[in-house]
Image 1 (cartoon, rainbow, N blue to C red):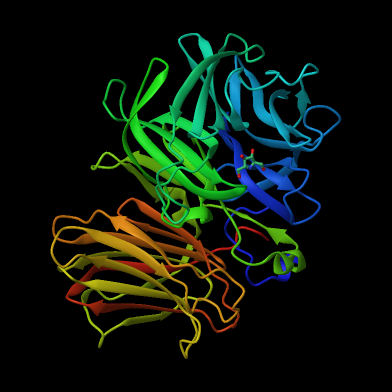
Image 2: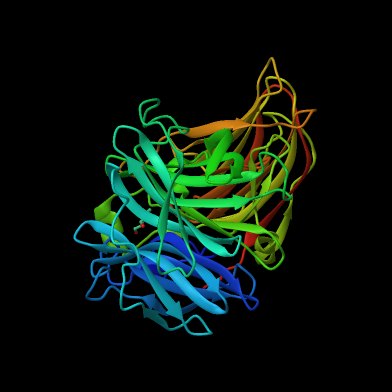
Length: 481
Ligand code: DQQ
């Protein structure tokens, strides 16, 4: 079934069939990249979640490995939920959330040297319950690191009436944990579900890392996926200073302007000292279509996270992604007007890169997955404010698909522009998966065109003066035979 679905990506990581959600246990172990993920191998639904496993030498081509964790009698009998992998003095060790009867508790499993076989600790869970005296809405997902000769851990949570929370724990051996206190809490009372910066009532998949050199101010980053009333909301970041047992925020914002389409991200530092992040691209089509397709969920391409000049996280696809480029297409430089659009036919899996220069008030459209008659088309727009340096990136999916049941909510947000209105735009399309990057801001979305001729691409000025300084386009190779 899955293999014949034209919406199924061909160069993103996917399980052979069934359901995928969060990336887990990301690591580079003795040179090999390991990607574990929330997986239901039996059906495209979020039930009885296993840990799927894949390996890669290059971050872009993957080999499926045997399932790493399977729910079994005990605290994870209803699911092995999200977590991380750490190196405990040479022993690969997974810390994850065991799910049983609507409750999640921290569990540990140790692995063989090749990370293929895992043994759960007989005395799981390693923490018997949430800390006393807190009225929590949830208690799951883990970020674990070594600090000052001890282990520290964050667990995602929510304090009723307060908001999301990252709860800090400490341990000598990963088996016995002491609660330290909340590292950071949110505010559920300010904001709403339409607001990309609102942190909801609970934080899933908390991730803490440092982007700058030791001692640099504002270079620690906390990422959490805001959740509210039983539904996934949006991934957020806080930059700031992690000192002692607290996190002092400086900036807060949406980690991806596409909202729920880049959810539950997790990151790790690789052997090249890069901060690499993957996230879960949820589906935008309804359950019955997904059931018929037999698969659900796409892993994002690997993203490198750095600290931007504005002190906020900057996201870009890892350089390795360009290995998949083939059949280069030239896109002419020069002024962009209505009259001289750059028209290409790139099909349904491609990578476009353009350095654009926008005058005040200018807007440039990159139309993708367009049919010849324009009945289906998805429009990515970069624009510059008429009266200031501010830029914006947006995606319009109103005509993205003739299927009225797919999600078509418009998405967008601010983008910092260069001093002369420069923007480096990168748009990577893999059938229904769309990853957009503009000057370090990411916007991930899904589109489901129905017509086989929805392969047109067009770059055109829509308003004001703009030009293409340089641009290129490529078709992308399949990673699945
Ligand atoms: N997915 C996992 C949870 C996590 C959520 C369950 C985020 O551990 O909170 O599959 O998508």
